[in-house]
Length: 77
Image (cartoon, rainbow, N blue to C red; front, side):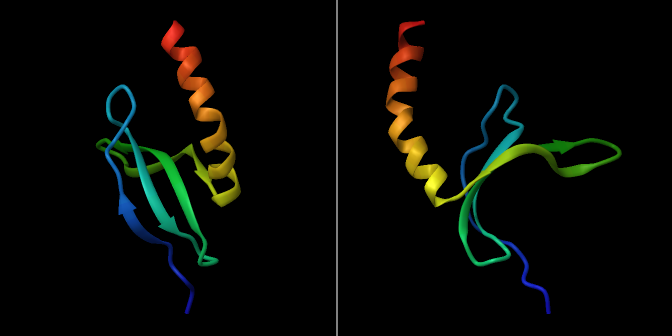
């Protein structure tokens, strides 16, 4: 029996049209990851696309360090 990914928590949609979803997922290896991915609804396809990013624990730790600087720069614009 193959292990399926499990959505642990889904967060508020983001993006210009709210077309990106941020979810905490337990992946096929049992690791918790953050998945931010485009979600589309059309006549021909409804679901997640390949457009997105998946961040593991080490990626999140780095992101946590750099986000304050990013916010500071963006506040000046």
